[in-house]
Image (cartoon, rainbow, N blue to C red; front, side, top):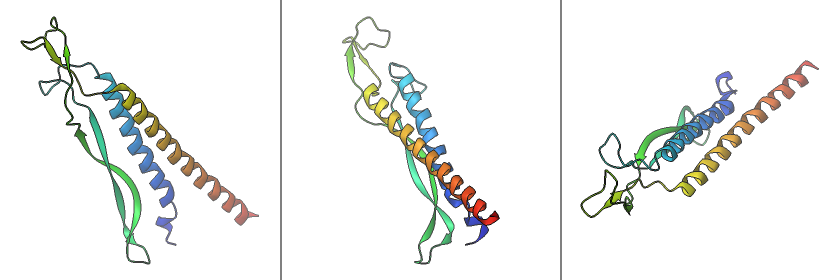
Length: 144
């Protein structure tokens, strides 16, 4: 095994932690804007989600496939689901009928997404810690 591949598992875990941290930041942004009826685009805030993609390494496996190199966030997409209309006649953004278009952010769904992102981050952290412990044990055996 070449030396540069020796620490590939920790790099994969690190890329997973970085991607999940970005996902948690995006979810926090969604939660913070759950009641924002005005955004920079001019309308109500639209829920955002992140798209992940695998990172393929330059090396190839014995079976001819590319070696995995982790994950990365490649795109932030806006959720195009219907914006709910709420009857609020006194609101400054109300239309002629008294309805206001609200963001398509649903707090229970965002909280579940936040929980799954947090658990995925913890799983990547645990994998990196286990890899470190295995390396420490291997070095201890080599010394002894």
